[in-house]
Amino acid sequence: MRSVLSFLDAPQLNAPEVYIHFKPEVFGEGGEMRDESTAKFLQHYMEENSAFVQRALAANAPGHIGDPEPDPDRLSL
Image (cartoon, rainbow, N blue to C red; front, top):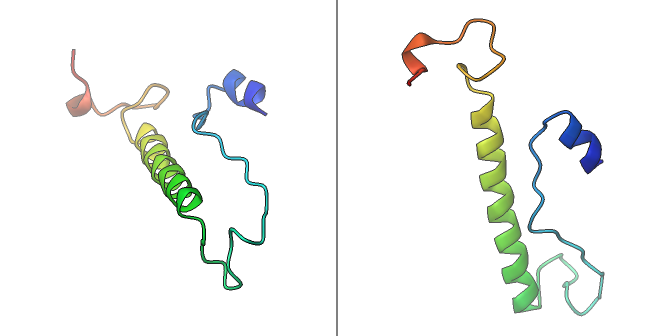
């Protein structure tokens, strides 16, 4: 998948990667986190993911390469 996305010049979140092995003692019955280190790791991942989405959405703002009519007020040399 990464090769295809790279070929298409699509934005990718390459790091951090998350691999979670389910262990009943880590998650409570209601889905809450019981393990503090796992909770911190997932919080960090979600913060990075949120920042990535914001960057990807900003890349689609008007005036970027490929726009048929870029906004001259947004271009700077």
